[in-house]
Image (cartoon, rainbow, N blue to C red; front, side):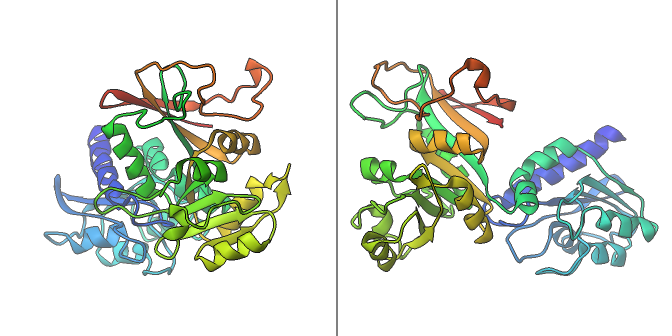
Length: 361
């Protein structure tokens, strides 16, 4: 029975992932309805403001779901938001049993949904594939609890730890499969952030270049508003949300705002943008996640500030050498190996000829 229960929950997880990049700041949720050993309804949360997974699954049922088992990756909501409570729909359709992946961290739910169903006489079992369900919504659980973005530090490097040749050439460190995965990640997260040095050196566009992808908010850490008015980011600022974090208001900042950028005035720390203050401001603006793409100085500053939650390192099996060639992390570094920041829950995923190593801090 337990294996079958996990099989249905993993199917619900597969469905939930279809909402990636479309439901933020809501969680990804999948639901499967089973009657007499047969799946009679499936659904997932498709977009923010749309029906929740449970209501979609009930709507899609091929027969009366009365007495059926309902499997859902996240505890059913019990409050009015953009849509009615899912607990009401479960009760109305006389579902027999409910299996939940993990409880909701939202204070408006947080165990209340499961208790409402139990009080109505519906058996509820929680913790089915719980770790997988929690990992699926690591962004949501962090944001709903802390109100600051979940930050993913991403970089691509050669096997000897270089992100570019000593000449500065960096196209391309990794292959097509790895680069596509980066764009998929861009589509899933709310924002993408770089330092002004990256803008001055690379003039990036920071868009999502896959079919059906969604462009994230583009964020530039630029203490003294050095971002060029003719760079790609500013030329497209009226079309794609572009945020510039500064520590002072000057004529250049005013010009960037006039050109279409959103200016965020932050506290200064060592003459740089205070990243902790920036995260609180972006979180208050509704950004629940950020892909931190560079450069090396900003990456290390973010680690020092404690704002990074996950690391994505794309490793290309090639060697380029060069004592002056850049590495992913700049700054002064930590003084002792014992001070190094360890990752946990590490996974390794092959992407073409390259490898993606992921872990959480």
